[in-house]
Length: 74
Image 1: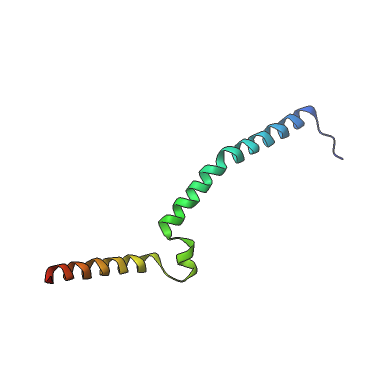
Image 2 (image 1 turned 135 degrees about the horizontal axis):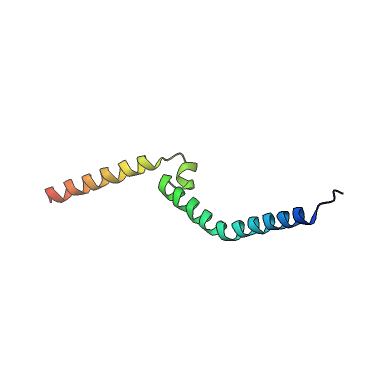
């Protein structure tokens, strides 16, 4: 086993404490960020079934147009 000086041990301990701090305080913001980007780019289920987010947007626009036309003629 490699013998480390007291200073090297303190540096490693400080490094591990910093990593532990980053994991503890960075995990939730990371999950929130990933959730936000998933919502922005479309959900996994939509991508899984091959439906793109812009296709759904166009479908919604067409549906609004059709319902508006139906309201004009009634």
